[in-house]
Length: 269
Image 1 (cartoon, rainbow, N blue to C red):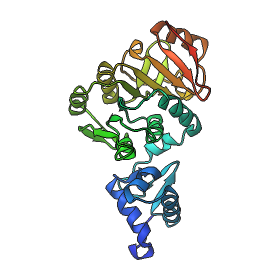
Image 2: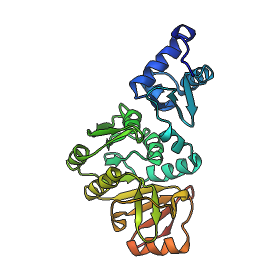
Image 3: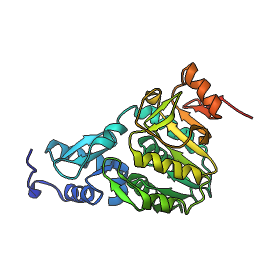
Image 4: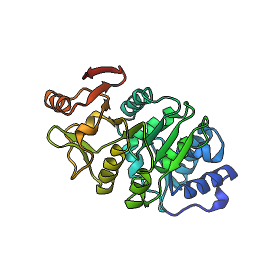
């Protein structure tokens, strides 16, 4: 589909298109609102108008440029079970307190965690996620460190040896991680080898490791092992795992919190 001429767009729509390009071709509505210093409702109206002209594609929580740098894969994942992910994020945010140094990865559930943490103050947030950095920067006296490294557009984040070296310079009170799958034989699995490697590095630098996982990833397989399952302190999920998975989590010493109830189902002394 050909892109409409600029003259067909209002000034606000042109600003929105420019912001999308500056943010890499894809962005969440909250990122665009912060970047443009407007309300999210204003951004949503602009996205709706641009989508009608075929300039952008609307996805859950944001938009991407059609035929340009936009990659819809991240937002497609955001659209899967958003209610469950929001509840998981709410439960994880309750674990975070003022003054903590925390790591947030590029996972879609982690993106929802970042939105919840905007209400807190005095945090030091370290991330390899473009979206998390945009969400957290300049909020409530929080300090944000964005790790360098090679950018992976499909994950909207940085990975590799530079990223890992910079991550090792921090002492995390808590690391909030995601995974592509969880099996009772292998533990937490990753589709991307560099994401698996970074999870190991970050876990080694953290006093507490929290994994947010929606129930669709129970039993899901992926080719790469990351952090050892016994390095995870807390799993926050939207549904209880089956008996075999529960037994495995117990053997690894992983506590489980179910959202939205927030009641611990497995606990250890």
